[in-house]
Image (cartoon, rainbow, N blue to C red; front, side, top):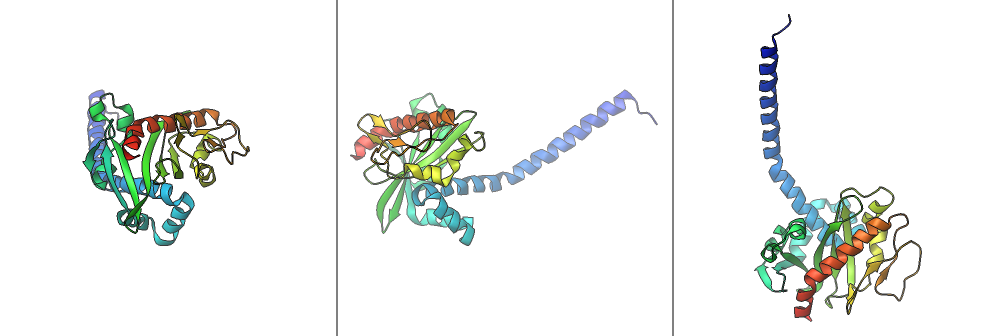
Length: 242
């Protein structure tokens, strides 16, 4: 039997409200799980910058990803610095709570917060880990860089992306690409480490030059801009530490 237009409209509205309510309820119920996963992912990235992506992947595979979170608790402390390099918040929880994306978009100095993670071995700081955030060819890119106690030598780096081209710019997440930064200098004087155009050249003995990626010059330009921008953000802190 054919229903009236009014019946169809009312039925559709009721169905929309019910489905919308169910979806909202599911989303609300998943919030704790999502936040927990986001927290673990951040810890995973920090530890990957310090220990190397390959090693952390092996630990996660053999002992479970939760073990990486436990290692973070055992070895990482932290704090937050402001635009002048001053400590504005103490504690690793404060450092974890900072969203680099929000700082990247912030216009006012009071809204710009820069977390510093300290990796400790035997109670001694052996690496400082700083977040990175910027724009690649298509969308957001981000990462973490681990620096030696001299605050200049790169001990490790990890990158992530939202939409770079598979097989090209997306290769920034490959462990062998990230390994090219190890041992390089984040900066020397006013110069900052820079990924070069092309791929396959030897930059041994050139502490500020990193081999690039073929066919991904725009993504690598984004990586360079990201690193240089975040170096400038942390420069006052570096100066206070030196």
